Length: 141
Length: 123
Image 1 (cartoon, chains in turn orange, blue):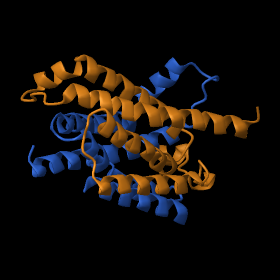
Image 2 (image 1 turned 120 degrees about the vertical axis):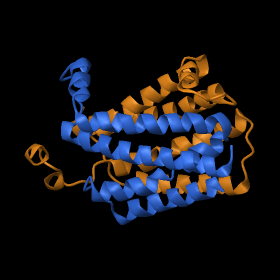
Image 3 (image 1 turned 90 degrees about the vertical axis):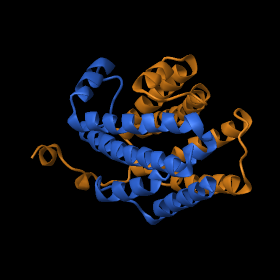
């Protein structure tokens, strides 16, 4: 497989992982945290080890690591707007799973995010010219 | 939860996310592209654990995370998530200014649409 093609598939795979793991993690976290008493640091500790919150945290760690890997070869300004899809999935989950009331303006906002995401998706994954990246020497000094 | 307290938590989440993401991207680009076949993942992880900007990024993200945990314990998920996505606008600006990424008109427009959408969602 040519290097370009390899990088394209690697990017797609990691994008999918980044997009799916965050909404699922947020959902699980919210289910676990709902109406929990948070008066002391101990309450946070207890919350972290409760099943739903723990699963949410594991999924968010998967999200963090796959995103870190993705950022090592793709630009932040490319990765960030694309992961906005995750926010839309989260809103849908809020409606369907948590029974939250979502107004017309919230759904319109979701469509705007889709449009913005599609626009950014039409650009290349690496936009910074090599010569303008900080070199190791520059960074160390 | 009173609205003022909710927005204070949102501000904390956004500030932590923006600082964390920018530091993380800066450090990961210094590190260079991660290639999974060339070296053991363990060694990659050990190398990364030594980077000070990455540690600082993780501290920022932890602050953001605990603020988010607190917010979702009371507020709607469909409020908390879009509200914290306000970080997009600041991050695109920082990507241009600090990371020296080239952000073209199409990307600015995309980011602006996303930001507008986020604002509508938060209403």
